[in-house]
Amino acid sequence: MASRKRRRKPAPQPELRCQCGEELKRFRPFCPRCGRAHIWGDTAHETNAECGHCGWVVSDYSWYCPWCGEDIHEADVSSDRPLKAPAGFRFSAKCDAGCGGGVQYPMPHCPWCGAEQEWPDDEYEGTCPHCSRGVDDWMDHCPWCGEDATGQDLIPRALRRVRRLLLVSRIRPWGFRILLRPGVSGVDPKYPKIVEIDNDWVGKRNRHEIPWPMLVGLTCHELGHSFLYHHWRWTRDWQFVEAFGEVDKAYRVSDAGWVDFQRRRVTTTHPNFVTAYAATHPQEDFAETFRFYVTRRGRMRELLAEMGQKRKGVVVYQKFLELHRYLRGLR
Image (cartoon, rainbow, N blue to C red; front, side, top):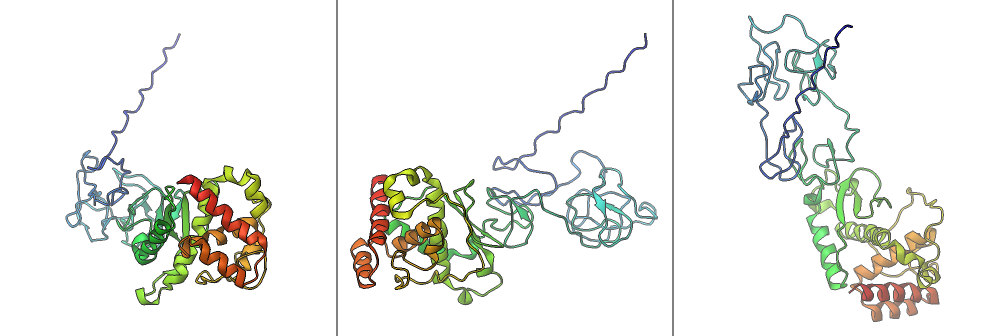
Protein backbone atom coordinates (compact mmCIF):
# COMPACT_ATOMS: atom_id res chain seq x y z
CA MET A 1 0.00 0.00 0.00
CA ALA A 2 1.48 3.30 -1.08
CA SER A 3 2.16 5.70 1.73
CA ARG A 4 0.52 9.09 1.67
CA LYS A 5 2.59 12.20 2.12
CA ARG A 6 1.39 14.51 4.81
CA ARG A 7 1.26 18.13 3.81
CA ARG A 8 2.60 20.51 6.36
CA LYS A 9 0.32 23.33 7.29
CA PRO A 10 1.80 26.74 6.54
CA ALA A 11 3.14 28.49 9.59
CA PRO A 12 0.68 31.12 10.84
CA GLN A 13 1.72 34.65 10.10
CA PRO A 14 2.46 36.67 13.25
CA GLU A 15 0.05 39.49 13.98
CA LEU A 16 1.40 42.90 13.09
CA ARG A 17 0.40 45.50 15.64
CA CYS A 18 1.05 49.18 16.09
CA GLN A 19 2.43 50.63 19.32
CA CYS A 20 -1.13 51.66 20.19
CA GLY A 21 -2.22 48.00 20.00
CA GLU A 22 -4.13 48.23 16.72
CA GLU A 23 -3.73 45.29 14.34
CA LEU A 24 -2.07 46.34 11.09
CA LYS A 25 -2.36 45.11 7.55
CA ARG A 26 0.87 44.86 5.61
CA PHE A 27 1.89 47.73 3.36
CA ARG A 28 -0.55 50.22 4.89
CA PRO A 29 1.53 53.37 5.46
CA PHE A 30 -0.38 54.60 8.54
CA CYS A 31 -2.16 53.14 11.56
CA PRO A 32 -5.94 53.57 11.27
CA ARG A 33 -6.31 54.24 15.01
CA CYS A 34 -3.48 56.62 15.96
CA GLY A 35 -2.22 57.71 12.52
CA ARG A 36 1.39 56.69 13.27
CA ALA A 37 3.48 56.23 10.10
CA HIS A 38 5.03 52.79 9.49
CA ILE A 39 7.95 51.68 7.33
CA TRP A 40 7.63 48.15 5.96
CA GLY A 41 11.21 47.01 5.62
CA ASP A 42 12.60 43.57 4.80
CA THR A 43 12.30 42.27 8.36
CA ALA A 44 11.55 38.71 7.19
CA HIS A 45 14.55 38.68 4.78
CA GLU A 46 12.34 37.82 1.83
CA THR A 47 14.20 39.91 -0.76
CA ASN A 48 17.29 41.07 1.17
CA ALA A 49 16.82 44.53 -0.31
CA GLU A 50 15.35 47.81 0.89
CA CYS A 51 14.86 51.12 -0.88
CA GLY A 52 17.58 53.62 -0.04
CA HIS A 53 15.10 56.50 -0.23
CA CYS A 54 12.05 55.32 1.79
CA GLY A 55 13.39 52.20 3.55
CA TRP A 56 10.61 49.90 2.33
CA VAL A 57 11.20 46.37 1.09
CA VAL A 58 11.95 46.13 -2.65
CA SER A 59 13.18 43.55 -5.10
CA ASP A 60 16.63 43.69 -6.70
CA TYR A 61 14.98 42.83 -10.02
CA SER A 62 12.87 46.01 -10.02
CA TRP A 63 13.72 49.24 -11.82
CA TYR A 64 11.73 51.59 -9.58
CA CYS A 65 10.69 51.53 -5.94
CA PRO A 66 7.00 50.57 -5.97
CA TRP A 67 6.38 52.62 -2.79
CA CYS A 68 8.08 55.97 -3.42
CA GLY A 69 8.66 55.77 -7.19
CA GLU A 70 12.42 56.46 -7.04
CA ASP A 71 14.79 54.93 -9.59
CA ILE A 72 16.59 51.92 -8.03
CA HIS A 73 17.80 50.35 -11.28
CA GLU A 74 21.11 48.45 -11.15
CA ALA A 75 22.64 47.34 -14.42
CA ASP A 76 24.00 43.99 -13.22
CA VAL A 77 21.05 43.03 -10.99
CA SER A 78 17.78 44.47 -12.35
CA SER A 79 15.76 42.37 -14.75
CA ASP A 80 16.12 43.05 -18.48
CA ARG A 81 12.34 42.82 -18.95
CA PRO A 82 9.28 43.45 -16.76
CA LEU A 83 8.43 40.43 -14.64
CA LYS A 84 5.04 39.23 -13.49
CA ALA A 85 6.02 38.80 -9.84
CA PRO A 86 9.63 39.07 -8.61
CA ALA A 87 10.87 37.15 -5.60
CA GLY A 88 9.29 38.33 -2.36
CA PHE A 89 6.15 39.74 -4.00
CA ARG A 90 3.03 38.29 -5.55
CA PHE A 91 1.07 39.20 -8.65
CA SER A 92 -2.16 41.14 -8.11
CA ALA A 93 -2.67 42.92 -11.44
CA LYS A 94 -0.89 44.17 -14.53
CA CYS A 95 0.55 47.66 -14.69
CA ASP A 96 -2.04 50.33 -15.50
CA ALA A 97 0.40 51.96 -17.96
CA GLY A 98 0.66 48.76 -20.01
CA CYS A 99 4.38 48.11 -19.62
CA GLY A 100 3.68 44.38 -19.25
CA GLY A 101 4.92 44.00 -15.68
CA GLY A 102 2.98 42.86 -12.68
CA VAL A 103 2.24 44.77 -9.48
CA GLN A 104 1.11 43.74 -6.01
CA TYR A 105 -1.66 45.45 -4.04
CA PRO A 106 -1.35 48.18 -2.83
CA MET A 107 1.78 49.39 -4.67
CA PRO A 108 1.27 53.07 -5.65
CA HIS A 109 3.93 52.80 -8.41
CA CYS A 110 4.84 50.19 -10.97
CA PRO A 111 8.22 48.58 -10.12
CA TRP A 112 9.08 48.37 -13.81
CA CYS A 113 8.10 51.72 -15.34
CA GLY A 114 7.38 53.85 -12.25
CA ALA A 115 3.86 54.76 -13.43
CA GLU A 116 1.27 55.55 -10.75
CA GLN A 117 -1.25 52.80 -10.09
CA GLU A 118 -4.95 53.02 -9.16
CA TRP A 119 -6.50 50.33 -6.99
CA PRO A 120 -10.22 49.70 -6.46
CA ASP A 121 -11.24 50.02 -2.81
CA ASP A 122 -14.44 47.98 -2.97
CA GLU A 123 -13.70 46.19 0.30
CA TYR A 124 -13.99 49.40 2.31
CA GLU A 125 -17.13 51.03 3.64
CA GLY A 126 -16.34 54.60 2.64
CA THR A 127 -13.90 57.01 1.04
CA CYS A 128 -11.36 59.26 2.73
CA PRO A 129 -12.32 62.94 2.21
CA HIS A 130 -8.63 63.87 1.91
CA CYS A 131 -7.12 61.33 -0.52
CA SER A 132 -10.26 59.58 -1.87
CA ARG A 133 -8.88 56.14 -0.91
CA GLY A 134 -10.93 53.49 0.83
CA VAL A 135 -11.55 53.70 4.58
CA ASP A 136 -13.87 51.99 7.06
CA ASP A 137 -16.35 53.79 9.28
CA TRP A 138 -14.51 52.83 12.48
CA MET A 139 -11.16 54.25 11.33
CA ASP A 140 -10.00 57.45 13.01
CA HIS A 141 -7.13 57.97 10.55
CA CYS A 142 -6.80 57.09 6.89
CA PRO A 143 -4.36 54.17 6.45
CA TRP A 144 -3.16 55.68 3.15
CA CYS A 145 -2.60 59.38 3.89
CA GLY A 146 -2.75 59.49 7.71
CA GLU A 147 -5.34 62.29 7.79
CA ASP A 148 -8.66 62.26 9.67
CA ALA A 149 -10.67 59.47 8.02
CA THR A 150 -13.97 60.87 9.31
CA GLY A 151 -13.46 64.30 7.76
CA GLN A 152 -14.47 66.03 10.98
CA ASP A 153 -11.32 68.15 10.79
CA LEU A 154 -12.83 69.83 7.70
CA ILE A 155 -16.03 70.94 9.47
CA PRO A 156 -14.98 71.78 13.07
CA ARG A 157 -17.07 74.95 13.20
CA ALA A 158 -20.30 73.13 12.32
CA LEU A 159 -19.60 70.24 14.72
CA ARG A 160 -18.90 72.60 17.62
CA ARG A 161 -22.18 74.38 16.92
CA VAL A 162 -24.15 71.13 16.74
CA ARG A 163 -22.68 69.79 19.98
CA ARG A 164 -23.46 73.09 21.68
CA LEU A 165 -27.07 72.99 20.45
CA LEU A 166 -27.52 69.42 21.70
CA LEU A 167 -26.10 70.43 25.07
CA VAL A 168 -28.36 73.43 25.60
CA SER A 169 -31.33 71.39 24.34
CA ARG A 170 -30.49 68.86 27.06
CA ILE A 171 -30.17 65.98 24.61
CA ARG A 172 -27.59 63.45 25.66
CA PRO A 173 -25.39 62.05 22.85
CA TRP A 174 -26.31 58.48 21.91
CA GLY A 175 -22.90 57.47 20.52
CA PHE A 176 -23.39 58.79 17.00
CA ARG A 177 -20.41 59.16 14.66
CA ILE A 178 -20.42 61.87 11.98
CA LEU A 179 -18.57 61.04 8.75
CA LEU A 180 -17.88 63.25 5.76
CA ARG A 181 -18.50 61.12 2.68
CA PRO A 182 -19.13 61.73 -1.05
CA GLY A 183 -22.70 61.37 -2.24
CA VAL A 184 -26.04 61.96 -0.57
CA SER A 185 -26.29 62.68 3.15
CA GLY A 186 -28.18 60.10 5.17
CA VAL A 187 -28.31 57.39 7.82
CA ASP A 188 -28.61 53.66 7.17
CA PRO A 189 -31.26 52.09 9.45
CA LYS A 190 -28.97 49.08 9.90
CA TYR A 191 -26.25 51.35 11.31
CA PRO A 192 -28.18 54.07 13.15
CA LYS A 193 -25.15 55.63 14.83
CA ILE A 194 -23.31 56.33 11.54
CA VAL A 195 -24.31 59.77 10.21
CA GLU A 196 -22.96 60.56 6.74
CA ILE A 197 -22.74 64.18 5.53
CA ASP A 198 -22.29 64.98 1.84
CA ASN A 199 -18.71 66.03 1.16
CA ASP A 200 -19.87 68.36 -1.63
CA TRP A 201 -20.79 70.94 1.02
CA VAL A 202 -17.10 71.24 1.82
CA GLY A 203 -15.15 69.85 -1.15
CA LYS A 204 -12.23 72.07 -2.09
CA ARG A 205 -13.86 75.27 -0.89
CA ASN A 206 -12.16 77.77 1.35
CA ARG A 207 -13.38 78.05 4.92
CA HIS A 208 -15.16 81.37 4.24
CA GLU A 209 -17.02 79.80 1.29
CA ILE A 210 -18.55 76.93 3.28
CA PRO A 211 -22.26 77.53 4.14
CA TRP A 212 -21.89 76.85 7.85
CA PRO A 213 -25.54 77.55 8.85
CA MET A 214 -26.75 75.19 6.12
CA LEU A 215 -24.26 72.55 7.26
CA VAL A 216 -25.44 72.86 10.87
CA GLY A 217 -29.07 72.44 9.85
CA LEU A 218 -28.26 69.46 7.62
CA THR A 219 -26.32 67.76 10.42
CA CYS A 220 -29.17 68.29 12.89
CA HIS A 221 -31.63 66.87 10.34
CA GLU A 222 -29.54 63.71 9.84
CA LEU A 223 -29.08 63.41 13.59
CA GLY A 224 -32.86 63.31 13.78
CA HIS A 225 -32.83 60.20 11.58
CA SER A 226 -30.10 58.67 13.71
CA PHE A 227 -32.00 59.42 16.92
CA LEU A 228 -35.18 57.89 15.51
CA TYR A 229 -33.47 54.68 14.32
CA HIS A 230 -31.62 54.39 17.63
CA HIS A 231 -34.91 54.66 19.56
CA TRP A 232 -37.04 52.69 17.09
CA ARG A 233 -39.10 51.05 19.84
CA TRP A 234 -40.54 54.47 20.58
CA THR A 235 -42.21 54.48 17.13
CA ARG A 236 -44.63 51.75 18.36
CA ASP A 237 -46.01 54.01 21.06
CA TRP A 238 -49.56 55.16 20.27
CA GLN A 239 -48.67 58.74 21.16
CA PHE A 240 -45.86 58.74 18.61
CA VAL A 241 -48.05 57.18 15.92
CA GLU A 242 -50.81 59.73 16.56
CA ALA A 243 -48.34 62.59 16.13
CA PHE A 244 -46.04 61.40 13.30
CA GLY A 245 -47.85 58.45 11.74
CA GLU A 246 -46.41 55.12 10.56
CA VAL A 247 -42.71 55.74 10.02
CA ASP A 248 -42.03 52.25 8.60
CA LYS A 249 -44.11 52.68 5.46
CA ALA A 250 -42.43 52.57 2.04
CA TYR A 251 -39.89 55.34 1.54
CA ARG A 252 -40.19 56.96 -1.89
CA VAL A 253 -38.68 60.40 -1.34
CA SER A 254 -36.51 61.81 -4.12
CA ASP A 255 -33.04 63.01 -3.15
CA ALA A 256 -32.97 65.52 -6.01
CA GLY A 257 -35.25 68.02 -4.27
CA TRP A 258 -33.88 71.20 -2.70
CA VAL A 259 -34.31 71.63 1.04
CA ASP A 260 -33.44 74.82 2.90
CA PHE A 261 -31.80 73.42 6.04
CA GLN A 262 -30.60 76.91 6.91
CA ARG A 263 -34.16 78.02 7.69
CA ARG A 264 -34.85 78.40 11.42
CA ARG A 265 -38.41 79.67 11.18
CA VAL A 266 -41.51 77.55 10.77
CA THR A 267 -42.99 77.83 7.28
CA THR A 268 -46.53 79.00 6.58
CA THR A 269 -47.20 76.25 4.01
CA HIS A 270 -48.60 72.85 5.00
CA PRO A 271 -50.48 73.59 8.24
CA ASN A 272 -49.83 70.07 9.58
CA PHE A 273 -46.06 70.09 9.05
CA VAL A 274 -43.19 72.36 10.05
CA THR A 275 -41.80 72.48 6.48
CA ALA A 276 -42.80 71.30 3.03
CA TYR A 277 -40.09 68.62 3.09
CA ALA A 278 -41.55 67.21 6.30
CA ALA A 279 -44.73 66.34 4.40
CA THR A 280 -42.91 63.88 2.12
CA HIS A 281 -42.62 61.03 4.66
CA PRO A 282 -43.16 60.48 8.41
CA GLN A 283 -39.42 59.88 8.89
CA GLU A 284 -38.62 63.22 7.27
CA ASP A 285 -41.37 64.78 9.37
CA PHE A 286 -39.65 63.61 12.55
CA ALA A 287 -36.19 64.65 11.30
CA GLU A 288 -37.43 68.17 10.51
CA THR A 289 -39.21 68.42 13.87
CA PHE A 290 -36.02 67.27 15.59
CA ARG A 291 -34.00 69.83 13.64
CA PHE A 292 -36.25 72.72 14.67
CA TYR A 293 -36.27 71.52 18.27
CA VAL A 294 -32.45 71.43 18.40
CA THR A 295 -31.69 74.61 16.45
CA ARG A 296 -34.21 76.51 18.61
CA ARG A 297 -32.52 75.08 21.73
CA GLY A 298 -35.61 73.24 22.91
CA ARG A 299 -37.47 76.45 23.82
CA MET A 300 -41.01 75.12 23.76
CA ARG A 301 -42.74 78.41 24.64
CA GLU A 302 -41.06 80.16 21.76
CA LEU A 303 -41.84 77.33 19.33
CA LEU A 304 -45.48 77.00 20.35
CA ALA A 305 -46.00 80.77 20.14
CA GLU A 306 -44.54 80.87 16.63
CA MET A 307 -46.72 77.98 15.49
CA GLY A 308 -49.73 79.88 16.72
CA GLN A 309 -48.68 82.90 14.65
CA LYS A 310 -48.18 80.69 11.58
CA ARG A 311 -51.60 79.07 12.18
CA LYS A 312 -50.30 75.55 12.36
CA GLY A 313 -52.59 72.61 13.05
CA VAL A 314 -52.98 70.88 16.39
CA VAL A 315 -50.93 67.90 15.17
CA VAL A 316 -47.82 70.07 14.86
CA TYR A 317 -48.18 70.98 18.54
CA GLN A 318 -48.48 67.26 19.31
CA LYS A 319 -45.24 66.50 17.47
CA PHE A 320 -43.15 68.94 19.47
CA LEU A 321 -44.85 68.04 22.75
CA GLU A 322 -44.32 64.31 22.14
CA LEU A 323 -40.64 64.84 21.29
CA HIS A 324 -40.21 67.04 24.36
CA ARG A 325 -41.96 64.48 26.57
CA TYR A 326 -39.78 61.63 25.33
CA LEU A 327 -36.55 63.61 25.77
CA ARG A 328 -37.50 64.49 29.32
CA GLY A 329 -38.09 60.78 29.99
CA LEU A 330 -34.58 59.96 28.77
CA ARG A 331 -33.05 62.43 31.21
